[in-house]
Image 1 (cartoon, rainbow, N blue to C red):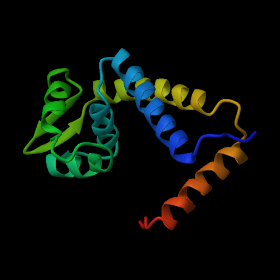
Image 2 (image 1 turned 90 degrees about the horizontal axis):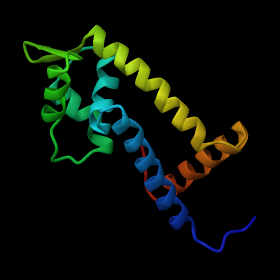
Image 3 (image 1 turned 60 degrees about the horizontal axis):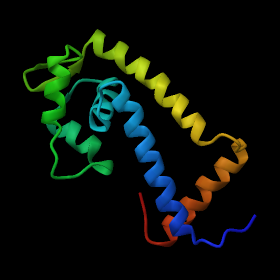
Length: 137
C-alpha cells in the first residue's frame, strides 16, 4: 500500500491522535497528563519539585511547573510532601496501577493489526530519520 501523503502528514496525525486519546483516557479518570507523568516518576522514589519538573520536561511546556498538578494530588491523598520531597502514598500507588492498566489497553489498541516486527521496524525507521536530522541522546 502506497500513500499519496508525505510522512510528515502521518507523523503529525498519529502524534495528535495519540495525544488526544491519551488525554481523553486520563481525563475520564480525573487525571491530567502531567499528573500521570508525576505519578509515574514518583512510583520509583520520592522527588523534589525540580526533579519532577526535569523528568516531565521532554514532553511538557517548559514554562509550566509541576506544583499546580501536585497540589491536586496532595489534596486527593495520593501524594504527600515532606521537607520539599514529594512521595507517592498507598492510595496514589493503587490509583496509578489502575490507570496503568487503562493506559496499557489504550496503547495496545493503537498498535492493533501490527505485528511486533512491524512495530519494531516502524520505531527503527523513525529513530533513524531522527538521527539523520541531528537527534542524539
